[in-house]
Image 1: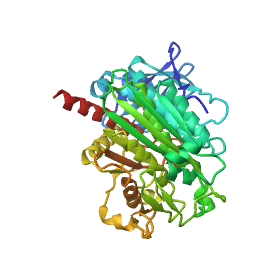
Image 2 (image 1 turned 90 degrees about the horizontal axis):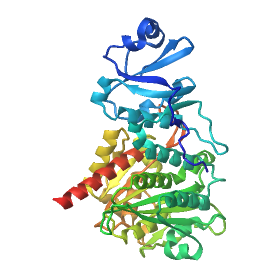
Image 3 (image 1 turned 180 degrees about the vertical axis):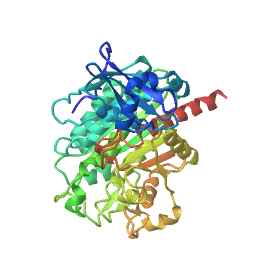
Image 4 (image 1 turned 135 degrees about the vertical axis):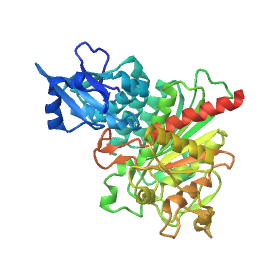
Length: 471
């Protein structure tokens, strides 16, 4: 798999043309000069997002992008990567814009990288339009790398990324940061994660679990512990409750939760935050064979609870159940999990808004506010315990599905909550992990929805924890 090196960025800018970032209401005469009237006629009157290519003796001499300082989503700068002519460019924010948005160069650089991304399962992509990486924008490099990493993993076809390959890709990333990493397989996996093992039993490509731990250089043994859990179903046929052909077309993305959590771990470690970090990824394939779980089977989880399989296509929650149980054994300060878990969340919120569930309202509000502030939104749905009874079964403690054709995302989250210790602050993200179409900064294909929001939330959680202890 491609190393997420940002080849769209350059370190030297001697021959780079300027992209002026300007406010709509500032004087544009100095930037557009005598071409102003012609450019307005060709490209439209000034409004945020408008890009003007200013002619010169040898073609385009410079560019001017009009910026709305109140906008939050850095993806709005993604079109720079596809709209600027080939060559090297450098950002030049106006003094007026910098006064309002001191981080505008960093935001625009990250947005440019988001828009420049192209998936390549073979040789490296050649970038004809590149951007100079200024000193003030270097802080966004880990996030840009993480976005490319997550997208690459999700976009990989399933024949090239099975459980073993996903686990190894994760281990390679984690070990770069000095994390202690273990890949659990075979009998050890069956003993430690029996429910997860049952999901992977139908495939010839054996399941793997990635377990990793890391501690920042300034973190003590008592530093706050953040635990991350990701669903890594590398392909989901639905099992015996097989999906229709149309429903399988994008099932390579069913490991999007694992890709998101690995990407988040990369940014957290790259910034050397003063925390302890644990990561668990359940890497499996849900397939059909004589060894596959069947509807009506009763599985025993790591927690000792039994689960009756009502539908083999509701496998993600089975994968997560054992991982959440183990994560709680470390008594983390915060536990986050992510999964492409339910179609019901997409019916409720569409493809762009991940559904957030949490047993702690302060944690939920921190994540939601962070998402709003960085333009990487999600929406909270309730852990409505009036539906708990829908999951109860006569022959087992729980069913993995209900017999009600409603509230599928909520009942899936309620199922997961059975494996989270009540004292642990937990948030669950039900994500689509995909862009159905092209928009600014978001090419069609795999996507790390909520990554920037979760990173910002983690920073706020850590600062709040440190502040409360110092007080």
